[in-house]
Image 1 (cartoon, protein in one colour):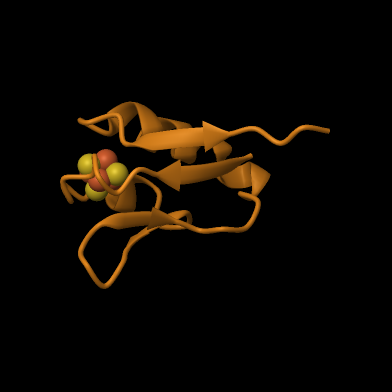
Image 2 (image 1 turned 45 degrees about the vertical axis):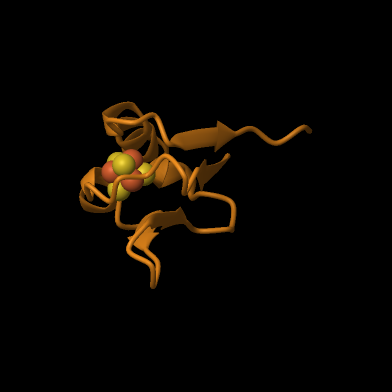
Length: 66
Ligand code: SF4
């Protein structure tokens, strides 16, 4: 599982970064970005909480095809 943030929808509220800093951080422009690597299984639940908590639905879950 990976996550991606739609920068155009992000309002920089910080919810995802505070819920799951292992996956989300702010870039130099002040918008959230997700790590590019595969998310550690231990962080799945927090990642999903962050996705659900985003007020603008800017975060997407990317499921790998395997
Ligand atoms: S929760 Fe959504 S709007 Fe808030 S910083 Fe994260 S991606 Fe941006």
